[in-house]
Length: 145
Image 1 (cartoon, one colour):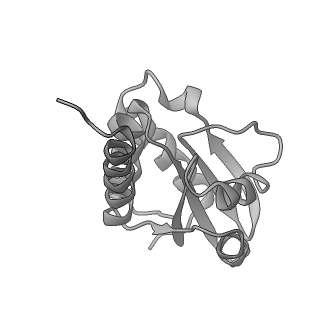
Image 2 (cartoon, rainbow, N blue to C red):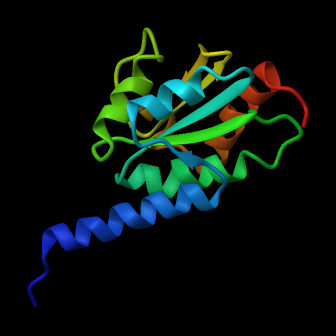
């Protein structure tokens, strides 16, 4: 049985995109969209998505489940590392002091970085531990909805 690798990867990417959008995040695919959204007033959570196992098994489920909390970011967005390269590069330009990391989360307030949850904070951890890290950030930086 032969499988076209590109066709397989397209399905994997499509599924990864759908999971995070279904959770309530808006995809940003251009640098212009990133600038527009990340400069909005209020808090913005950026999920840097990827196709790695820790993104699917830990980060995306944590991104969805973390929203079941009294305090949440005003804006939920995602960029896709390795897919929407220019949008991801633009988003990462806001994450000063942190090397590129995917999957990862960045919480910004009024366009300024508040905190990061990097790949090493995700990979090898249980999804609920990442949920707790996200909710701790919401508690510190976000308003009750």
